[in-house]
Structure formats: structure tokens, C-alpha cells
Length: 318
Image 1 (tube, one colour):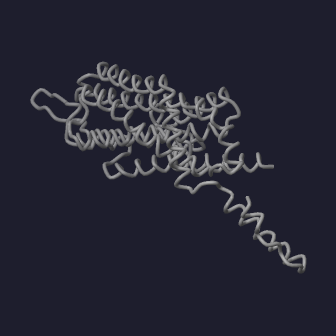
Image 2 (image 1 turned 180 degrees about the vertical axis):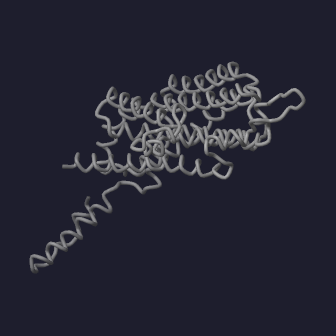
Image 3 (image 1 turned 135 degrees about the horizontal axis):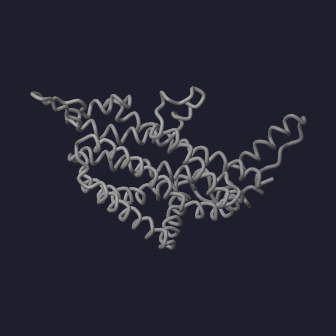
């Protein structure tokens, strides 16, 4: 502040010139009011986030055990899923439950974000660090943490169930699971910036996730939805995640027969993996499009969170 006090006063001039000069001084104050560089802010905040995660050992242990136990339970329920008509339904059920579990389990971080919000608003409004630095640090910390959770879940369920037995398909499965969890984390972070209380935040998460699941295409196909609800189908996070998992599985089993017709003299294939994809309006060319959309949701919710927090900070300054 001593540097600011030494800034020369504007010379006497017309009112308009005074206004512009004072504005320049104000801009200078705004530019140098932060105590540290952005890089230092991100490093310091990242370290703080790791400490918070480490201190909440119960949450850390719960998330790890949940991923492992749920994966093993699902793996033993759907073990050796098979290649028949029942196998088609089982795969759809497995992927749908996986999405429900992954998206709903992230609500556990809601109280952490909401409890941190008053501290964040106080510190950013006083110029300790930038809101954007906070979100960047949050992202950098949760990327590897949630990747570990994704790998644990994937290893525990994938091979027990007997999904597509190639490392490429398994790698894509892990990637999709990771992005789903990141997207859900972003979604919860955004709602924690909007919700006034933890109870309101939990209610919002529950209602919105239920709505997304309803319009995902699992219960009712897009073609069967009333036209005025079709837009919700495309806004559903579940849709793109479910499509990505189905494409990954059945593009590996394009020529695999799931339903046979056995006549008196002949035996012919009625439904292949490719037919399953076509019935849902999917094809292998959409494999990466769904991933891009999921990443888009991840970025969108973080940007919305940034805008909401900036608005809250500007209000707290007043």
C-alpha cells in the first residue's frame, strides 16, 4: 500500500480529465492489489486442497471403499455376463447403475464445498487470491484423485463382468468413468456455489440428477418422448455417458451374435452387436463425440461456478 500512496496526484485540469486519471489510478490499484502471483496462488491453494482431502480421511476412505466394494458387488452380480438376449439387457442395466452410482456418490463433497464458500468469499474479496486461481487449483487436485477412484472402480468391475476383453476398450472405459466423475464433481461444485445451504444443495442435486436420468433414454427412448421434452434428452449428462459406454462395448462385438434363430434345418443370427447399436441410434463413429460433450459439461459447470462466485464476491465487496 505504500507504493500506492506514493503515486502522484493528478494535476488540476478539466473534470473529464480528472475522472479519467482517477480511473487509471483505480485500475492500477486493482492490478496490484493481489499479494501473490497467479502461479503462487495456485500452488498454495493446491497444497491447501490436498491437506483438506487428507484431513477428511473418512471421506477419502469412504470414496475408495465405495468404488472397490460397489465394483466387486456389481462384478459378482453380473459375472460372466454372456452373449445372449439377456446379456444385452444386463449390459444396459450395468451401465445405467454405474452412472447412477458415480453421479450420486459425488454429493458427499457438497458439504466440503459449501463450508469452504464463506472462507473463499472472505479471502477473495479482500484480495488474498483470485477466484479463478481457486478453481484452477481445485481442478488440478481433483484430477489425479478422481482418476485413482476411476481406476479402482474399473478394475473391480470390468473383468469380473466379462466386458470387451481388449486393453483399448478397457482404457476407454476408465477414461469415460473418470470424465463422468469429474463432470459430476464439477456439477456439485457449481450447485454448491448457488445453493444457500447444504440441505438446499442436496435437494437440488437429487432432483436434477433424477431428471437427467429420466431423460437419458434408459427408461423411454427419444422417439417416444413428447416433442416439448426432447430438449431435456440432449441436456442430460446421463445420455452421453450411457451412449459412450454402450458404443465402447458393442463396437468391440459388432459381429458377435446375441440372438439366434434355430429352424428345423438352419440356424441363423437375428441380432448382432452392430444391430444393438443401430437400434439405439448409435454407431462407432460417435465414440469420441460423446467424450467431447462430457468434457464440455465438465468445463461448462466450472465456468458457471466461476461466474456465480465472482458475482458473490462483487456483492460482498459492496
